[in-house]
View (spheres, rainbow, N blue to C red):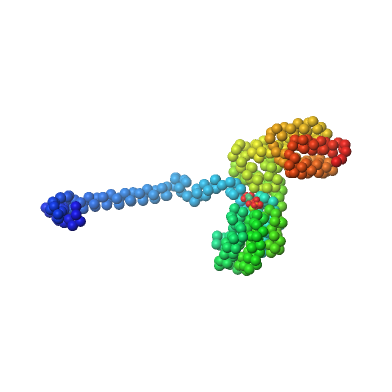
Length: 400
Ligand SMILES: Nc1ncnc2c1ncn2[C@@H]1O[C@H](COP(=O)(O)OP(=O)(O)OP(=O)(O)O)[C@@H](O)[C@H]1O
Ligand SMILES: [Mg+2]
C-alpha cells in the first residue's frame, strides 16, 4: 500500500484506497478498533496494578524472613564467604592483640591527629597492615575513601608510580578537619626498589604539610636510611602463645568450632606467633575435618608431629641413638623435607623441659645442622649425625 493511500470513512468502516490501482480495502469499524484499544489499555493498567500489589506484598510480608531485612542477609552472605583472617580483621585498636605499647601510642595519635610519618616493622601476621588501616579509618572517618592512597606489593610501585600516582595524590586538595592529613599507605615497602624509595624521599618532605606516610615492612633494614630518618619506626614482635590462643578461642566460640585442648595447642604451636597462620590453620582444619584436634591440625599443616620429635629428643637425652634414629627414619620415609624436620626439632627443643645447659648444647648442634641443610646438605646422614651429637652432648661423652 502506497504512503499516499487515502483513509476514508465509508459506511461506518475503515477503507484505504490505493491511488494507483484504485482498489479499496475495508477494515474493521473505527468504533470497534477504539473499543479494542481501550480494553487492552484497561487490561494493561490492571496488570501493572497487580504487579505492584505483588511487590508490596513481598516487601511487607512479615513471614518472608530473608527478604524482610535485605541488608542483613547481604551482610551475612558477604561474610560467610570470607576467609576468617579477613572476617576477623580488627577494626579498632582495642581488638588488636599484643604489642600494647605501640598500639597505645598510635591510639593517642589517632585521637589528637598530626601523626608523624611512620614505619611499622615486624614479622608476618602480627597486625602491621591491620594497625595502619585502623589508624587511617579512625583518623579520617568518612573521608577515608578520598584521603587515603593504599599501595601494596600487588600494585606496581616502581619509580614511575611514585613520580606520578603518589605525587599526584599528594598534590590533590582534600578538605579535612584540623590536625588531619591525607595518608599514603605503602604496605610491604621493603619490596620497593631502591630507586622508587629514593624518589619517595623528596615527596615526603615537600608535601609534609598535607600528607603523611604510613609504611609497613618485615625488614626495616631494607628501607633506605633516608626514609627511615624521616619516619618514626615502630617495631612489632611476634605474638605470644597465650595471645594467639585467646584470640583463637574467641573465634572458635563465634564460629561454633568443635575442638580439643590439644588441637588448640597444636594450632598455637604451628603458628609460632603468627596470627594469620593460626587463623588459616584453624579454618582449614575446621573445614577439612570438622573437629580441631592435634592429629587433624598436623595433617592440615603437613608438619612432623611434635610428639614424635619430643620422643626422639628424649631418646637422645638418654643416649639411646637407635630409638632416636627410628623416629627420624620414619619422618624421612613420610617424605618430610630436612628443613621442615630441623625447624620442628628446634621449635620442640626450645620449649622442652630439660636442664638449661644441655638445652643450649642441643640448640647449638641443631643450629649447625640447620646451616648445613641450608647450604644444600639435606641428607638423612646429616640428620643422623645430629642425633649422634645430641646423644654425646647428653651423656657427656666428649664435646665438639
Ligand atoms: N595483633 C592481631 N590481633 C588480631 N588479629 C590479628 C593480629 N595480627 C594479625 N591478625 C589477623 O591476621 C590477619 C593478617 O594481619 P595483617 O595483615 O595485619 O598482618 P601483617 O603484620 O601486615 O603481615 P605481613 O607482614 O605478612 O603483611 C588480620 O586480618 C587478622 O585477622
Ligand atoms: Mg601486611
